Image 1 (tube, rainbow, N blue to C red):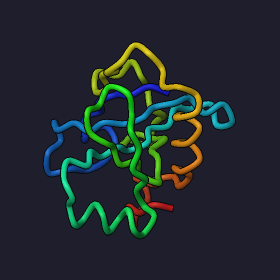
Image 2 (cartoon, rainbow, N blue to C red):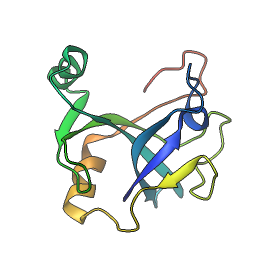
Image 3 (cartoon, rainbow, N blue to C red):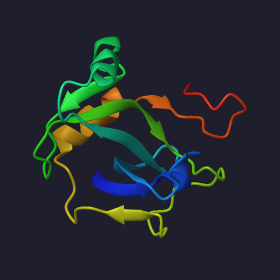
Image 4 (tube, rainbow, N blue to C red):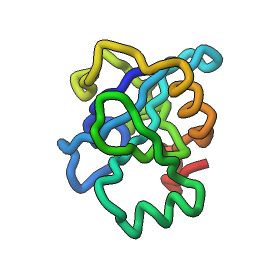
Length: 127
């Protein structure tokens, strides 16, 4: 599992298509595709973020390379907005680190982020 910056337009419709977000990206052997787990930084006590933490939608973790704690979402993307598999060689993805996260951290993220974000469904909802 690695940390990468992915352009919004690659994974979902956005008001800022050229904007980027951080993701923990890993290869899922069962589906033979990459998965991108959304990360959010917890700079200060944001009411919206902490309501998500209380509901169990975000887990706060310390990730290497970030000064502040990160919020790990409980869902992952496995397809682009076009319905294709995520391709790490895409110009819309920039790997932040050459190193992989420690297995314990990666396993914790995978265990928490078990919902698939269905970005191509009519409802555009998480499952």
